[in-house]
Image (cartoon, rainbow, N blue to C red; front, side):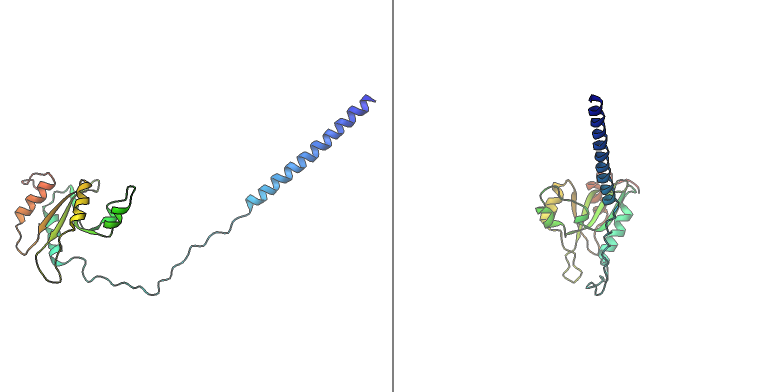
Length: 185
């Protein structure tokens, strides 16, 4: 009789083990089926250009700006590069509070001098004139100049007239860049 009970218990355990594995495998296969189902890919939203409410500027720089830029490229040593019309939002990023960034991000700088190898900005040159015509060059906003100086970026203002003093201007720029004036390009 004990043998019959032991055999019966073994059979019951084997049947239970069989059903347990059957249920376990069924759950695994249902999970695999769910994972194998591909989610539909999101389509990229296509944008169609119908009406472009924009107009190209007639000129990127007025003549005085262009001439000064050529002069700047001529006098600067090879390790520097001057780029005109730099937008502030490409030069600075907010670090926490965005209040000041929002006030200046839409402004642009006349010329920024960079170290060519690292493209680190080292000097901002604001040019202005005292003319009263359509192509008047205005001085930079004092608030913006203060922000730039807080960022340890030097700003110099240069009066550009028809006969501006090129040697004095060169000396000012070289002094701001901490280079000797008698340095050859």
